[in-house]
Each structure stands twice: as structure tokens, then as C-alpha cells.
Length: 163
Image 1 (tube, one colour):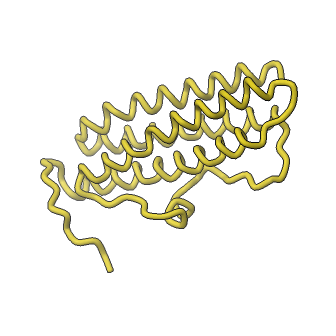
Image 2 (cartoon, helix red, strand yellow):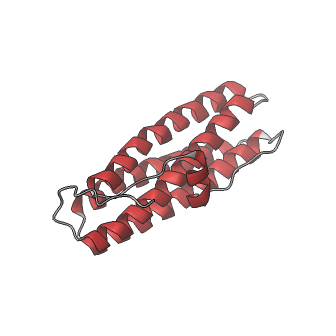
């Protein structure tokens, strides 16, 4: 069964908002995948830098999770539907899961850095779709999410220098 026309009030054209919603849903899926991977590494990090990495991963996971509601609500504000389940996330995510039983701390840092940089590219695609659609609100808010992901990547890069 397809979703009914939500008739959410907006002056944006439905075909334009659909492309923005698709881009946002991709960012949402990647955000959840990155959140869970970051928590996984938070739970399983070990070694001489345990405390520093454990706390940094937890802070970063909290920040990532904090954007998910904003992303999903932006989709809904444009009259579209968003992701509904873990399966739906897995069908949309481009960030790869890491199911390894052990990951060295240096590899955790590098993998999360690369995933955050990939998320930056996903956010840039959202920005481009929003610009094309004339969706000023999405275009503006995605800048903050991009900056947060860039900062996380920077912190991970700097932490990896000594790892």
C-alpha cells in the first residue's frame, strides 16, 4: 500500500520535494548506520587510549543521533515519508557496517573518519537537491550537519596521528 497524499502545507512543488526527501532519507540511513558503528566502536574499543577514544566515540554518537530527528522531520515538513525500520535503513545506507569481532583502535579511527567524510558528501548532495528545488530551509540546515561531520572527521584524523 502506498502512502496517501499527506497534503502537508508547503509552497514547494511535490516533484522537487521528492528529490530532496530522497536525498534526506539517504542521509538519514547513513546517519543511523554511522551512529550504530560509532556506538559499536565505543563499546568495543580497547588499548592504551581507551578512555579518550571511548569518550570521543560516545560524544560523536550522541551528536550523530541528535541530527536524525531533524533530518526525518525535515522530510515530513516537505510532505514526504521517511524511513520506518532497520530494514529500511539497510536498503538506503551507503555507510558499510562493520561486524568484525575485533577492530584495532587505529582502524576504528580511520574507518569512522572516512565514514564521516562520506556523510559530508551525502550532505552536499542534499544541499544540491535542496538548492535545485528552491528549498531554502533544507539548504540552510544541512550546513550545520555538514560542519558537524567535518569536525568529527577532523577529530578522528587528529586522534589517529598517534595511533
